[in-house]
Amino acid sequence: MRILVTNDDGIDSIGLHVLARALTELGDVVIVAPDREFSGSGAAVGALYEFRPEVRRCEVDGIAETWSLNGPPALCVLYSKLGVFGDPFDLVVSGINPGSNVGRSVYYSGTVGACLAARNGGVSGVAVSQAVTGWGIEGQGWIDIVQNQKWHVAAEVARVFVAGLVADPPASPVVVNLNVPNLEFPDIAGWEMTEVGADPPRSMAVGQLVATDDPDTFGVQMTWGDPVDLPPHTDGGAVERDLISVSYLSRITAENRRDLAKPEAALANLLG
Image 1 (cartoon, helix red, strand yellow):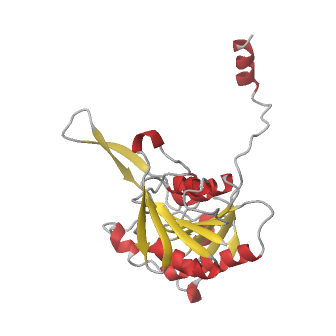
Image 2 (cartoon, helix red, strand yellow):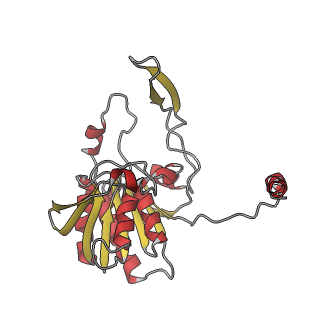
Image 3 (cartoon, one colour):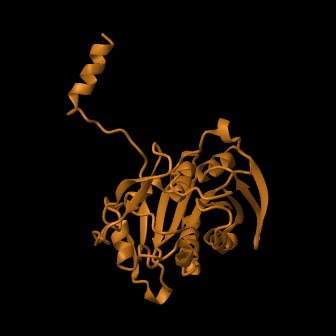
């Protein structure tokens, strides 16, 4: 069993290291992760002709083989499929992401995107994210927040889940999105199979332009509203109730929308 471990927070992320070490008892673990922050990259691989991807050998305690790549996590997975890092991988595990990847964030998450790329290559992927405590408190910096992450809890949840997946592999590749509360085990209320929610954990952000010294250039300031009570059957709602959320993500498929006649008619007219 060869397991590729990646993330979208970069090769130096503590969550990545803790996750990789937790999985070593399940197989041969190889880390291939971005050389810097790539959060929000989704399943993008980037404009390869512009940044000319480079791979660098790195060291992480307890892991025999570690590489960094100057591109997003989906590219790490794609290169692994092409044989850049040796024999084929049997599984991709992505994380541990500080901050839940629930609701709309699933569409943009590089953590999840790596697993989507894995399934595209015929391999299952497990995305692992952990809620952050106090996110949104005025004046609290990101570095202060991640210092309070209980990485060992999310890593153990991932290890147990992945062990079950390895013992009873699915008939076809799956993408699993695990979201874990930032709590010690005695305080976790359980787990639930959930749906991907429609709303974020906080009310919709408001964006506005902010002037700079250049009259033609503006910054963008984002302001979030109050926390939202999410439906309990959703991924975000489960984490809000101190539950581990397990979501299986579907493929993008075509819909039969015969009710939309005008666009097709316009194409028919265009083509004569």
